[in-house]
Length: 87
Image 1 (tube, rainbow, N blue to C red):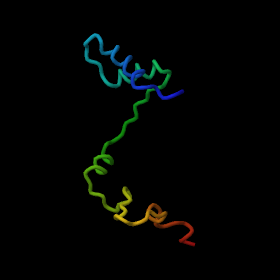
Image 2 (cartoon, one colour; image 1 turned 120 degrees about the horizontal axis):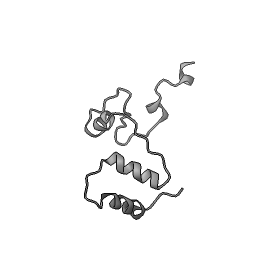
Image 3 (cartoon, helix red, strand yellow; image 1 turned 135 degrees about the vertical axis):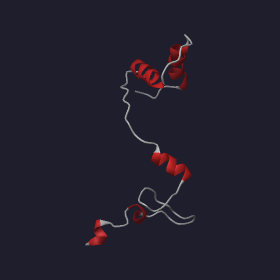
Image 4 (cartoon, helix red, strand yellow; image 1 turned 45 degrees about the horizontal axis):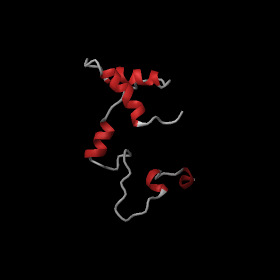
């Protein structure tokens, strides 16, 4: 299935809102998914990683790889203890 255009998604969404009644975002997404033959699944999670990515700290606690300006990105930045190096 091709990715629908903005207009293809917005028209059914506006039709849902046409009566002026408040609708929950999960209900709207469920209706859009049904309209496009997709499955809507809500997965519980946390925004903690996104918050930390935006506001820091960006420490080397294995959640982020911090590359100083001008430094090349290397495999070792992501996997410091490579199995090949440990043999």
